Length: 187
Image (cartoon, rainbow, N blue to C red; front, side):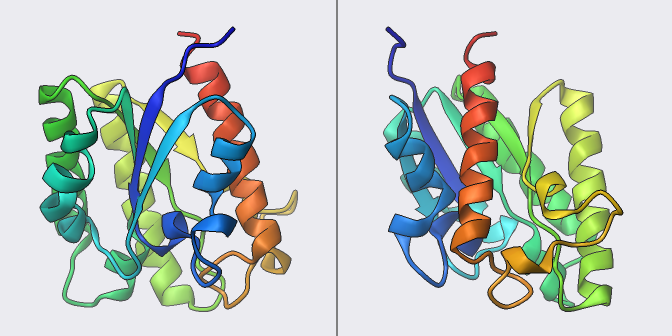
């Protein structure tokens, strides 16, 4: 029998399950289909900087085994936030988790299907987050990959508005996360 692992999912609307709510989220999918104890700490509209401010109350107080950090989409939409600022804040969350003995998992956000300029900025943030994960030897939960088809085009049928997944999209994210965690905790 698998022991229960507690995972806090720190993020934005892609973690929360917008526009449907918590029940449609990928976090809820994993909870329903596993023995993992997940905490949905997704807040609509949050940037990495917002998540830094929520770390104490939304992550540390739960004393999880791991924290999934999913962000970057709102940072990419905000012209006042540079890619470097976003990655700096992601790094602060990672350092806090490591100091607290919590295993950080960096998650890649899904691509933006309705704005090429925003998606280009998001892909730079994702690339920098991947590089940071590699440098720190952290695991990476890749939500983006299943949102592209074999030809490399964005699978727009998984979106409700070009930014947020529809219910099928959240299920794809849930299956991706569940598969990741089943392997992650075997290490």
